[in-house]
Image (cartoon, rainbow, N blue to C red; front, top):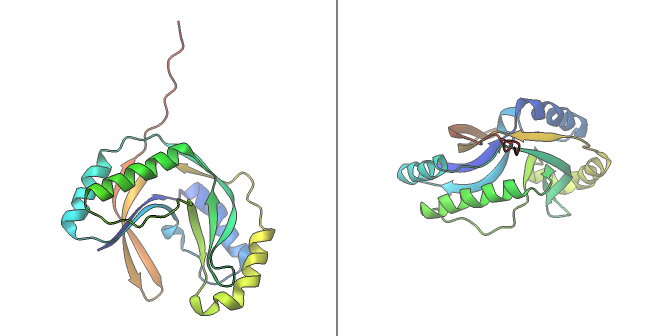
Length: 189
């Protein structure tokens, strides 16, 4: 089973992202139900491995967080970008969560690719056949778009199954894991 771990985009953040997709007017916007921030791509896993990953993810204790969208960016080559994404500003709590998730997956025997963490929410998947043709239009759209104040509240993360279909991938949540609200310390007496 093809799987990954990610933070789902809440309904409050999805609205502005969907309006942004419409404004970009490029092919293959990611459907609302598929908007997420990937923490770890697990690729193909058998059921016993996923059960072990699930047990490890259930044990993670991490704070809820508010993530800020810094800007839009193109992902892929300059000549043929494959994605337009909302890039998330650096956040130590997000990086710590991602590292814990990766550790759980590796402890379960999942071979993860070594990669630099560039947290983002994919908004548009540019079809391979149109990447070169649409590159200039995609660069112009990204350069002209401002995302001041767009935030993503992360109160949970999830284990997803990814099924490749004729119209793109379908993501199904297999399990969700809460992120704990940050409770301020009691006032000093």
